[in-house]
Image 1 (cartoon, rainbow, N blue to C red):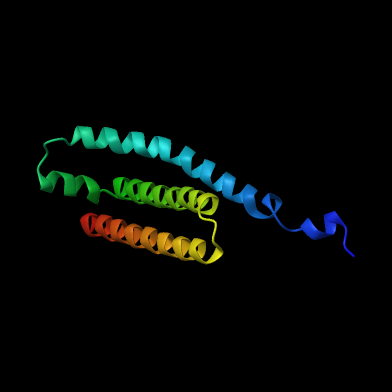
Image 2 (image 1 turned 90 degrees about the horizontal axis):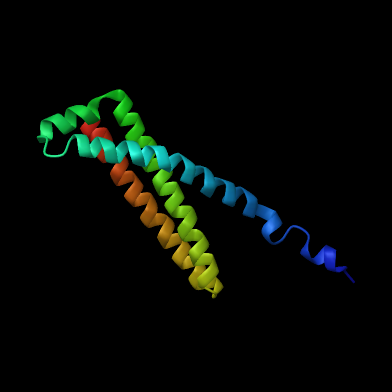
Length: 122
């Protein structure tokens, strides 16, 4: 015989929901200045030749900010999609399959963006 408290201890939103919520909020806050910087930088280089844009990306500060942008962006994307998948896919097996597929796709896109920035920066 177990009490109601004994049955639910360690389960539910008290287990890991707070960390997920904070991570999503912190990445959103980080994305605001990074996105503003990125859009303003794109507008400043509108119509510039490829060599000028490559030189701009090659500067260490710009390369680091671009890498920070994609890290925050793809982490925020993964967190948001995870919540949607967990909320709307009810079958345990299909939920796991979709979550794994989503994480693999996000990881692949992140690595592609990361390598592209590094190739332009170096």
